[in-house]
Image 1 (spheres, rainbow, N blue to C red):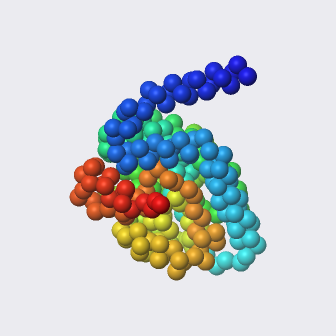
Image 2: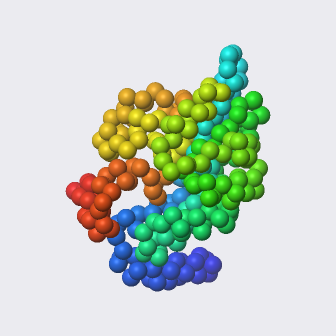
Image 3: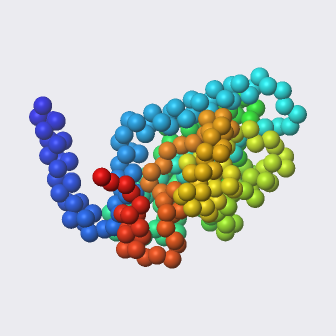
Length: 260
C-alpha cells in the first residue's frame, strides 16, 4: 500500500512538472508523446503486435506446405515494425522541437532500439522455413552501420548489407520492392505504414488511403501484416499540406478530429 501511494505521488509530480511545458506545445507535438506512452505502457499495444505476428506465423506455416516455383521472401519495414523508437518520440515531443533528420540520426546512431513485441520470434521462425527476409526502410544510407548493429544485436535473420535496403532519397518503397521481385516472390509484407505494402497508398490524401484500404481489404491479415503506430506516419501527414507551419497544422488537426 505504501509503495502504491509512493508511485502515485511520483506520477503526479511528474505530470505536474510536464504539464506547463506540454500545454504550451501544439497537438502535433503532444500527439507523439501520448502515442509513445501508449506504445510503451499499454498492454493493448503489446497484444496487437503479438496478434499481428501470430497471424503472420500462421500464414507462413500454411505457405510452408504449398508448392512454389520461385524462392519466396518477406519484405518488412523496420521502424515501429521490428524496432521500437518510442523513446525518440518522447524526447522530441518534450523538447518542443519539430522533427529533424539530424536529431533522428543522433538517435539511430546509438543502436539501442528495443524490439517490437513478437517481431524477433516471428522472423526467426519465417527464416527457419526457408523464407528470405528483406528489410526495406526509409532510413538513410548514413544510418546503415548503426541499423545493422541494432538488428544484429537482437539476432534478426538476414541482417546484412545485402538484405538491408535503405532510402536513396525517395520515401517511395515500390521501386525497391520491384528489385526484390526480380529474384523472389514476395509472399508477405510487414509494416506499420500503408506505404510499406503498395504504391497505391503513396502520397495520397486521407480519404484516398481509406478508400484503397477498403478495396484491398482481403490482403490485410493475408499478404499484408499491419502493426500499430499512433506516434507518426503517413496517416498523419496525409491530413495537411506540407507547407504549413506548426500552428497551422495544429489548427487543421483540431478541425479534423470529431467531437460532440
